Image 1 (tube, one colour):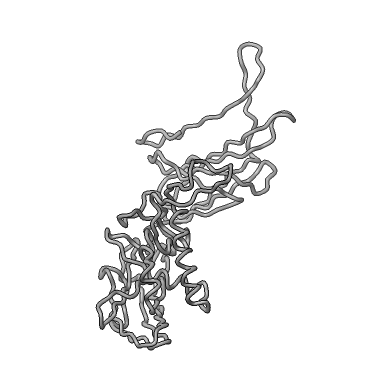
Image 2 (spheres, rainbow, N blue to C red; image 1 turned 90 degrees about the vertical axis):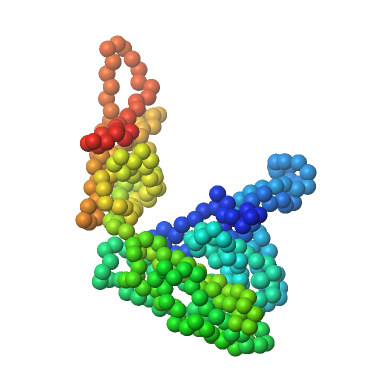
Length: 349
């Protein structure tokens, strides 16, 4: 499970990571838990900083043990449950948070210990309907998945179902479902990218007990419909002509902040159409045996428009920088700087 951090007012912590998984667009985190100013026992090891028996720390590393602790309580009560079932129960019984948070920020919501322990019904934690890449029509198709409810109790439970946001491309096949005692029931849910605008679409399916009006489960649903994007293929070649590894900066014309990506031989990025500068640095042998060298590799104009592009940063084509001074000197270090000037825009260094 991936855990987000919230504060004591159920607000998402500023340091908590968000957004979809790379490439797949899948939903993360799975759930949120308190992670701001958490006081816990301090390690008494000599290497631990601080004083006293306790420390107060913030981080997702403080939120995660809370989820693990509740998982342990559930595992004790239900020793026959698998890890996947424990996860499903924890996520589907989470508390929904105010503030318009999406599943890509807080998962299904904030961990609810009481609900997790007392609720007998669990639901599928999340349903992801796909990442639909550009271009769209006619390749995009509707996808239907089962939302499954499992009742560990001794009585049948009737649930009223609803989508938290009507402006999402999802359809429930039923507004009500009865989950038999110690049994399961399913409701098909359809996600249709053809009815969606480009961008990210996410929401929740909530299930409310028809008898009490109490919310029983929450399920995250999401679908991504990519804006205009193309593949930028980056290859890194060493001085020996073999695939190399290193950091590469990708700079959109006019944007002062580049993307930095670690390339191991080659990588592909999905980028908006535009003009890019791609630059990398690779360690190479120096001029002498006791010297180290650095190959500066730059493609100043990689154009993405109406299709993919490939950039090859090839250190085998790098040449030694020669320097001359008007008087007798000894080279200690040679340094290469470069600037790219985009017409009508500021220089990029």
